Image (cartoon, rainbow, N blue to C red):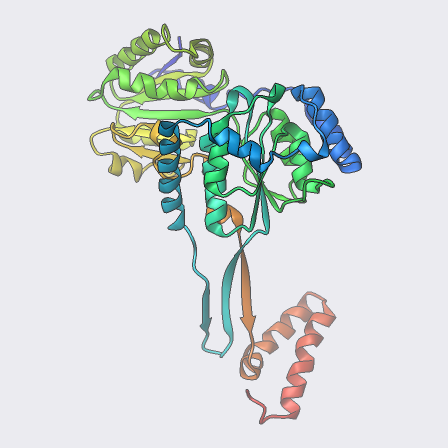
Amino acid sequence: MPHILNSADADFEARFSDLLNMKREDSPDVDDTVAGIIADVRARGDAAVIALTSKFDRLDLTPETLAFSKAEIDAQCALVTAEEAAALDLAAERIRAYHVRQMPEDASWTDPEGATLGWRWTPVSAAGLYVPGGIASYPSSVLMNAIPAKVAGVPRLAITVPTPDGKVNPLVLYAARTAGVDEIYRIGGAQAVAALAYGTDTIAPVDKITGPGNAFVAAAKRRVFGKVGIDMIAGPSEILVIADADNDPDWIALDLMSQAEHDESAQSILITTDAAFGQAVADAVAKRLETLDRRAVAGKSWADNGAIVTVRDLDEAADLSNRIAPEHLELCVADPEALAAKCIHAGAIFLGQWTPEAIGDYVGGPNHVLPTARSARFSSGLSVMDFLKRTTMARMTPAALRAIGPAAETLAISESLEAHGLSVTARLKKLNDTPKNTG
């Protein structure tokens, strides 16, 4: 059974706080191991990556076979069925159309003093996309990571996808080709992150690394941050559904299970204004868990981390939602837009009972790489902005320097930075010596 809470109960606040502070992440002591792996890759390059791939993925490679060849990619893409290809093509089209709208514009203007100011946006030169392999091999994640990068104008995209025992998911390679990926390496783990960050003889380094992974991948991304940029440290999947009684309990049960089936540490929470409806959803979940293929995983996630919370009204539901700051938030209520306006902390919001979260995972358009573990309080999902840099621009005329330069001199003196001030003073002196040179 999941955790059952009611905001009217005397111990609600303590129990809800326990729910918020529940540690769901697997927490093996991996940092020392990851530090050793990164140091090894930095020292030995390809040789370390090859040895570690043999050790962890039981796959023997050479520098020449680290990357998939064009012929191998062609052969794998040919295995994709027409139905699967059409679905991935539709997803790619919708994801691309959504992210094109995110592209910011350069700006330039002249202020009253005559200074020209502005900014410009430019892409990173190369991005590395980590794609989980094995049983957690998701072609949709390839699209969600690679397409925003291409829309942003990143010239080079490299992905790493582990292939344990040499097993390849053709859909991953098809998605990579569809998204415009340039290089596909059959490696994973902390060694793949290290190779992307520091480079080897075969793998050129990148500027930004995005994409989810296990605890070792997360630890590696933390360690290489600063050498390269990263998107986020992704934790276990989570969903919060706020639903009134005017819903099909089975639909809500399936939405909750859509995240619970990811892994045993995932979290699914229902907040409802009707206790009887909450019980109906719990009964529907129990029934579905009898038949789901991944019922062992989903069942443990639901029993350990799931919750059904009954509240007095939707305002209280919104307040609790903001404290949870969920990765995914479904609003299955009569006026979802009004409720969404009150829910200010969420990675992605799905409005109305006809918008299951799973649509967002595949073909909705918005990105499914989202902040977890309450980090939606201060961060956003993956977008084109993750692959762009803003550079500010400024140009002074002699008149503009005359107008604002003395203030810069004063501030430099106040900070005891003599050369700062003198660099302005020298120019102002030149202007004062040649007063007609007003520019």
